[in-house]
Image (cartoon, rainbow, N blue to C red; front, side, top):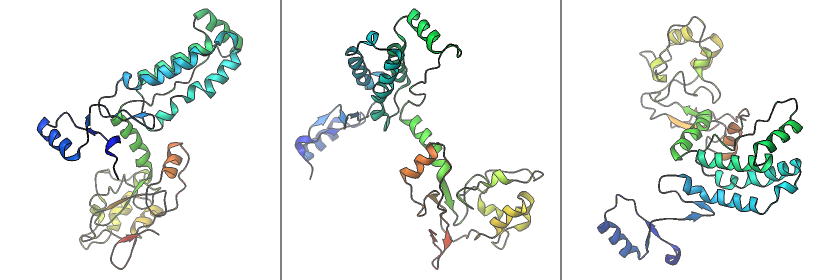
Length: 288
């Protein structure tokens, strides 16, 4: 059930008034120019600017206004900043890349709270607590905050680490740069020292002979024996095999999971439960 009292319709600027009016009349739901927030996070439908997340700075300022930094020790201010101030933006940052200017402003406010608002205060504290280090490098809140497209590109770096290909006709899978022999193996990393020049754009299907079998001589000219054996021992692509299929390598069923993606994002080795595309009676690849 949809509650009409709690619902609104947002129209793109490209929607003409006649169309939007007809939709509003049929749905009996009012239109809005601002979708507001959902679970405390702004619903983005326009260009992201500093003002979009101004509320985070306002909350931070409100917290700081209630504390007397001068009456706290340096250690106390560091503890307070770590436990409270740094956590204020993290809820929003779980789903959104904040603009860099917002992150810089948060960093600046936290630094001032810890070190003091004047240059003399900062020099005294740095001399006291960092005698041999010659100062302190404060960790930036983020070099990671930008707009939606940059967020997608950065997420893709993680996705590409876990993506693998199940070869069917072999025409859309790169022989050299895709993970298709094994979710952990990229053949370009195993080329022989004195191998012929490589064309990284060649698909898997380009390494078949005229009979549709692996071109063993060609493969052996590029790869060391132990790797070439893996390739030649796998099922060759078939012309009638259908399109190649992408799957998520770290999971046994080939389906994406946040948990295994987090392992990759944290820089830890993938805990691969190897998804093996094997041929069944109808020629479809099945998870092993």
